[in-house]
Image 1: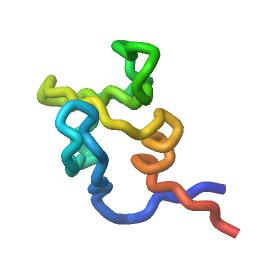
Image 2: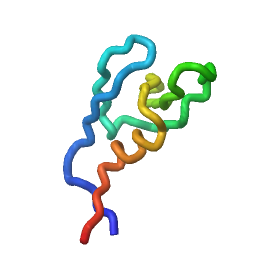
Image 3: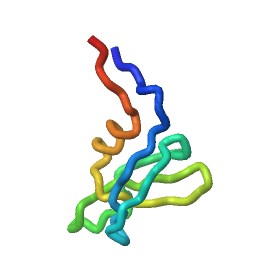
Image 4: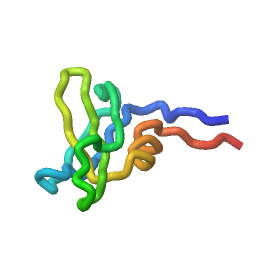
Length: 76
């Protein structure tokens, strides 16, 4: 069984364009997908789209972003 932590999912990622830290509120994330604009050389990263339409590409792989934003933990 998986359960969610009862907290606001605030996560800090590294922006691939600026290389600066970006704080992401998971409640505002609409979609996230492996970076579709990947150039084949730099780390692929993950494109995050917010409910406002704003986007950011973070350096973390898609699987890492999924686990981080789910905030899930195994019970038992």
